[in-house]
Every structure is written in structure tokens, then in C-alpha cells.
Length: 252
Image: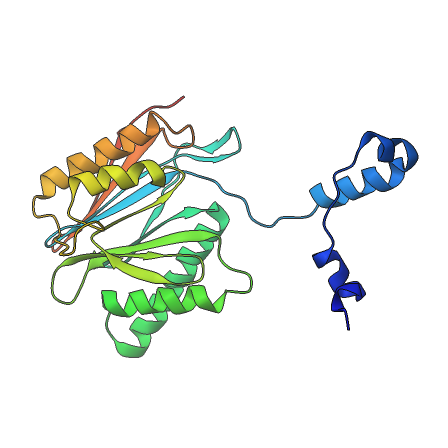
């Protein structure tokens, strides 16, 4: 039996034929109706762009991101913060749709509070890494449109970065990147730090050099990516706590 002739499968196997001038003349209502049906469907997701990078150090982590969010060629905000502190040892940052980034961050903050009430202590970075994974996977049928990075200090006192896709698949890294400028951030981070293209990964040791490199990378991306700009939010987490600084970059 040929299942391609069943109505529910028919549209999947039939090839869409491009309309020609003759079809426009003879069947204008069918041609125009099909075009409207294809292009007028509701899409709940929207990419709000921007760039974020996270770098793990020997006993610290550095998260640098821009503060611009946009929709197409329209700038929605110039002062948006992509980074959320979950615990004393963990930072969350993401790229994607702002509504889902904020929704996921609030969801994680709520789960951290529940964990603290049940266990009378903060979750470790390893526990949070697993919790982020299961939370994203639980929404796999209508996922958060946020590409998450979890950066912090693990139980051994070393900086670690976890990178996730929207379904919760993740990897442990010495640095990570997300957002509209990630293709430009990747080669710069590969050049500056021992990372994905090395068999033995080593976290950076000099905090000052990491901060300067992070600022230079975001500034360099802002010169070439219209969706990255306005200012840099530089967040440093170490044994002394969290430090946040803002520095201006390209605003046009």
C-alpha cells in the first residue's frame, strides 16, 4: 500500500511547485492563497541577538556580554543584562529570545531557592549543571529559545564553563560563546586560550589578561556585528564574590 496517498501524509511527500505566470493567470486564488498560508504562520520564537562569552580561570570565571537587544533592525533596549547570579559560585548567561532567557533564569532561581530550603545549603556547580540540563530537557516539546551557558567555580575551586543547546545537551569547556557574534568569538577565543583545539585544556591563570581579552573580543565583534553594541557588561566571579562593571562600546 502506498502511504503517500493518505491525506495526512500527502503534503509531506508532495513537492511544492513554484508558481509560474500561467498558474497566476488561470488560478490566481489558489496561488495567492497558498503563498499566504506558507508565509503567514504564527511563530512563537524570535531571535533578539546580542553576544555573550564566558571564560574559565584557575580560580575564577569571567562572563562578558553586550547590553543590546534587537528585533530585526530595531533596537529594543540598550541596557539589557544577560547574566544572572544563581548562587555564590554560579553565573547564568544566554543568548536567544529575551522572554525565554528571562523566563528560564527565573525558573532556575526558583529551583535554587527550593533546593536551599530542602537541603539547608546552596547547590554546587555540578548540581546546578545537572539541574539546568534536566530543566531544558523537560521543555523539549516546546523548548526555551535560549542558548545557555553556566559558568562558575566547582567543588575543587576551579573555574568551569558549561555550554547547552535548547534541549539540554551540554559540554564542559574552558570557554564558551553564544549569540549573534559567536562565529566571530570562536576563532578569537581559540587563539587566546587553550580550549577546544587542544587535547589538554588548561584554564587561564591571569585574571587581568582574561578581563582585557574578553573586553577586546566583545569590542571587536561590535565593530562587525550590527546586533552587538552599546556597552559591555563584565562579570567576574571568584572566591571574594561577584564584581560587575560596565564599559561603553559602539552605539550605532
